[in-house]
Length: 320
Image 1 (spheres, rainbow, N blue to C red):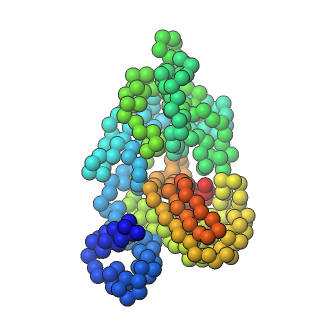
Image 2 (image 1 turned 90 degrees about the vertical axis):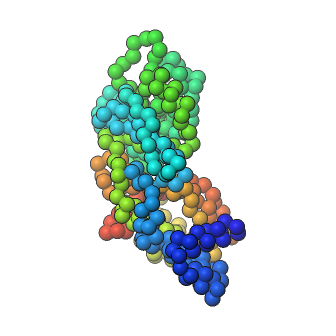
Image 3 (image 1 turned 45 degrees about the horizontal axis):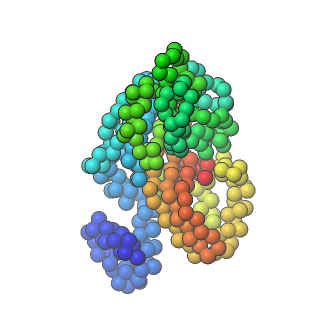
């Protein structure tokens, strides 16, 4: 309850208007909540908010750092959020990459994947060939899997200390051991994303980000309101869920859920929106922490959407 009223005060201060207070005065907390939900679903709010932020790499709540790997350059960069909210490149290393060019497709093709990944595990008891430690990536991610890509074991690791090493990897990202140790001393694995591309996209368009963020919360608003048709209008005909459901199967499933017409509470936090690497420039990764409460079901955890923009409308291609 305290957090709720803090949010109201922040809303009031941001817009320097009496409207929220008047809504509360005349109609109560529920009406005020609905007004705030509508505000989040509006592009104007996000345009104002993004105007104050560094969106060099996208919109990032709850992510303090990024690793970016430019395959064309053979470089790995570490970017850290500063106290003023901007990202600064703190470390830059030469990197060995897969011996074959292009995006990874299948196990054994010796390609370094193109995509956005989390670091899932740190390994420090390794064959000496991989150096002193390694970070395991989340390849294959949701988007990889729905496109039929396979394989595993894509790491950021070191190199052999006292033996000859190859000039490329089987698909991993390899650093000199001294560089890897320096990175390890700095890196917060749980709050860092890894972006791999031929050339990593930067200076992301704030208007597109505002459109996607407002559409994300418009999707949430349709969900809150049990508006099935509006909710499903955000899904692309090519949609695949993590469990393999296509759009028809997903529609039937959601129709049964929405038919309950039960009140629900849905919160999104730690929202991140980044352009997805690769040749298709209209793909975006959206991640957030979701808290969902209804009488028949409760959920709290991380959600991932792969989306596109079509005439300023968010279309969800994949969901987990």
